[in-house]
Image 1 (cartoon, rainbow, N blue to C red):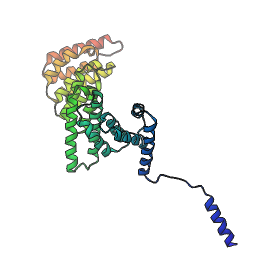
Image 2: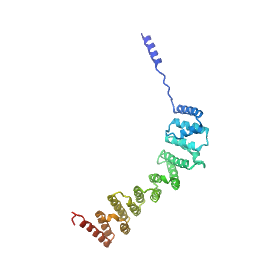
Image 3: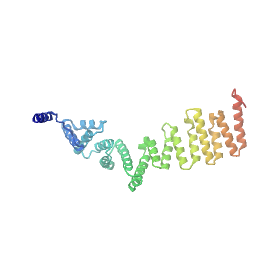
Image 4: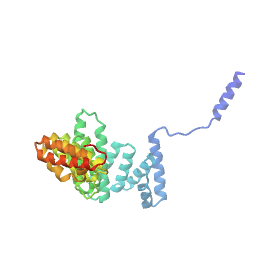
Amino acid sequence: MSAMISLRSRSSATAEPVRLRFSSSGQTLIFGLTVALILLMMFPGQILQRRLEQSAASDSLTIAYLMAWLRAKPDDHHLRLQLALHQHETGQVFRAWTTLQPVLASPALDEQDRYRAELLHLNLLEKLLWAERADSAIFMRRQKEFIEQLRILSRSPRFDDRLEHFAAKAYAMGEIHLARNLYLRLITSDRPRNLNWYRQIAVLALADNQPAMAGRILLLGLDLTPTPEQRRILFLEAMRHFQAANRLEEALNAARLRLGSLANDPVTLEALARLALAANRPDIAEYYVSLLLKQRIQTPGRQP
């Protein structure tokens, strides 16, 4: 009986299907290279290269294709850049860094490839930076390299479309002056203005202990406020920054020039009357009080 059970066990064991598996990433890579070589034989080179460049997927098979093609064309820096971009997308930071170096050294890149290569270089520098302990000497060295590269790219007109991104990176790295200069370039550029840029400059000015500059910048952004209430909030915030800098006369002059539609806003008029009194300018305070009284008289249902 036991012999029969043993035979059945062996029979059922041999009846199980055999499953083939790739046991390592190395075998996957070898498989990819094999398929790539077959494709190289099946398709004309330019057709295959276009297919690889247009591939949105970044996976081991795509990378294997590109590596095989690069072996056939080792001096093709456009192809090498494609490989580095795919390696970066799949988290192969050190491989992407190694692949990219000859591309950066090439003087023959066209404008688009140079743009993509330098942006990738910056991204890889940041990835390598955060791979280190923040208190290590390597971290400090890589942080310096990243900031220097950020400065270089931000000076190039080629990267004007990345200024906001660069400014945010500079601020995150504690480079207040660089971040502020980049936001200033944004508000003086031909691009449609963004109120957030003005607010960011004000924040950076305050971080640099320059509240008067923060006030001036916020006043420049007044025309971008979408509602009267938001205009009032921004205007009064600017006045507070002037007060913090003890620049009361400048605040009153700025208010005279930039008051605009807020001349009909009782909350703003009351704040300006108090500001004038604090600046020892009763004549100006009297003017704002007269405007305030006029508003209250003209508004039905308001008590004097």
